[in-house]
Length: 89
Image (cartoon, rainbow, N blue to C red; front, side, top):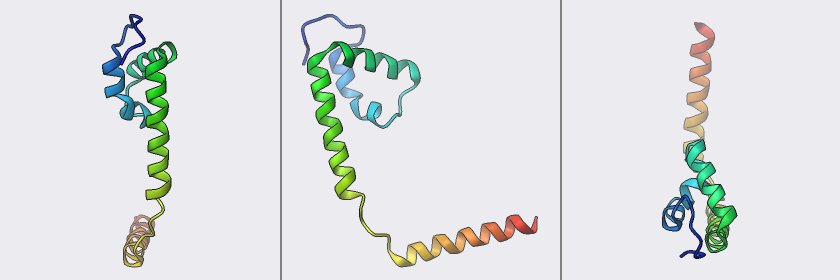
């Protein structure tokens, strides 16, 4: 995919890094390079938009699972244990 214009960052490289870009897992320099490319390249921007929508849909529909009560209880007990330990120090 390419808009036919030369870019400092190759379209394939940008599209390979879309998920890490969306997750905020790139350093500031790489993030800036990707953002600049997306600002200049319509086809990549369209692909980025699609990927972002898919990711949001997955998060919306798969992130609503309830936590098993026993797991919640274990976590709460551990938090209380750490609090008590810190208070006694």
